[in-house]
Length: 273
Image 1 (cartoon, rainbow, N blue to C red):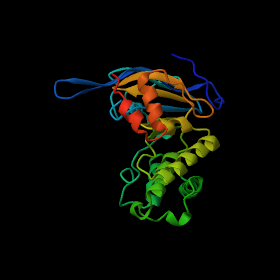
Image 2: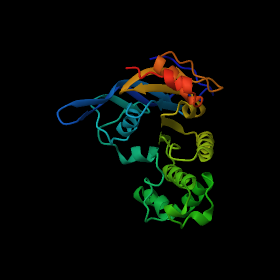
Image 3: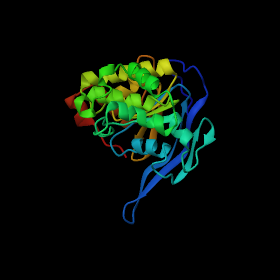
Image 4: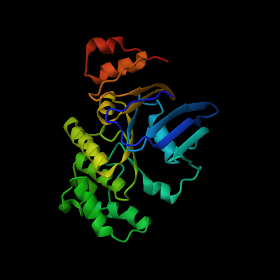
């Protein structure tokens, strides 16, 4: 595997997540779909690692495999050096939390924000529920009066702050971020990305971020794996100013597209196999 230098000199070279030839296959009625095909990479402790690629490239499938929602067809996943068993433990779900793409769909519409935040604390047996809810709402900059509102009474950006608060309330070490801003307006996207960067610094978190937008990944991450059709095409470092030295033609096309709409770039873009 290529050795990568980080743009922020990640404070520890310990590894939080390791994928070793991970494969995830689906039976689509007699035909096997190789959604993830022998993918290997590692995420440094306290680092931010991006997975980028078009829809169907296998990015989100990797996150689901990490959480145990998609069964592995092959390979190993290690967390803090320990191989994960097929069934994830309760301790795993305390240390690894996920933020989903659509904050409205991921929050129960008939539960108040208070209930949404209290539920994981109750499941894991925490007693200081009031203090933890107040603290996490402050961490994500949600006013206290929102606590007894319902998701439909909040804006999209506010709902995503609730989703982030729910992920943080158990004090995990790792956040899996599945397109956390793609359902939001552009101005709100910037707010959420800045919030995530701030939280990572303050809480010493490790991020594995999935996105189809290379510009988002280059802003958030020190390293990026480029995926296409279940395969890892390229593993790259991101410079301190967000530049990526892409080599594969597909990655070069993604990088050009991330810089904004350009008719000539779109005309020249090729779907490389």
